[in-house]
Image (tube, rainbow, N blue to C red; front, side, top):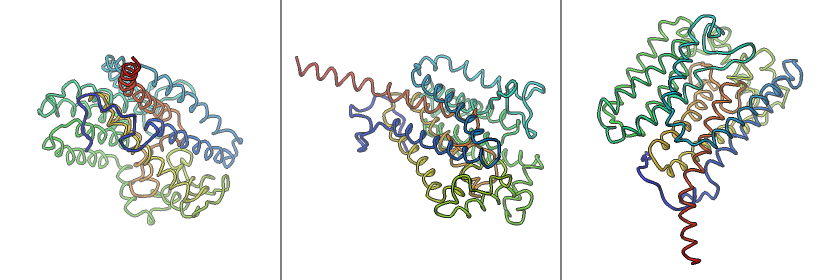
Length: 393
């Protein structure tokens, strides 16, 4: 397990201890850019297949990608401690947004769920930004109570109630997948902060029980879960989407059928350009590119872990760890759903799937990681400058 830092770290250059000449955040940025370019390429193919003009999805996604890049740049320049001083405002706005989406005629209803706020064609999924707000609050609170992290009240009860509040508001939208993601991320941050396992471990069966109860009282969710246990037997109805994703992955083989030549996205595979875009990559570009996607996400996770060892304090350590977990866990869930390892749940593939809200969130997460590359190495550079000055004098 990575140990949370209590003091500024070594004076080696970033990554040199691990033999990595390039700063880990730069590696993460390059991998994220590669995934985004791949997403644009596949979405261009989808535009052709849906006969909505050769640039339909491409222009739409490119617009969100440019906005996400601007958000990433702005976040990389802002003072993290400045944001920390306003953590209660960030958390309050996120909670207010989660409440507003439940109000009729305020929250936008799509497919039976109220998850969006917006006006006209502009829509934002509030739960996406609530993920980051929860990370900010947990990082601030746990760092503030670092000396009392082993206590039940301050080290477990209060942060657990905050996690339950955020996940509960998301779950009743309903969005059980995002709620599960937020709950797991919160659990891991408590673990990394040093909370006692005797308090944490009972959370797992309690959370599983609450999740199962919500699935049980929602007939459509229960039917979807039961169909997941017999995909082939329900391939014409409840498991239709997953079955078509399997057909797409199988027909792609090693080299794929070629861009724009895939059949599954021509009204066979629902949500082909969003939640199930990984299946389109497998069909049109083949096994090599699907493995490349997995490899790039693995590199992002590994580079993030290496970068975390440079954290100067617990707050920034947990903040970057939370950002890394949001990217990695969301990718794992999406890939697990498309390949049939997890029950079907709509969740975007980071940096690749079409959709504005998740792209903006990824820009914020990436911006925070890039921000810490500069702020974490500044003391090292200043120390080297002083040493060089002493030698010259």
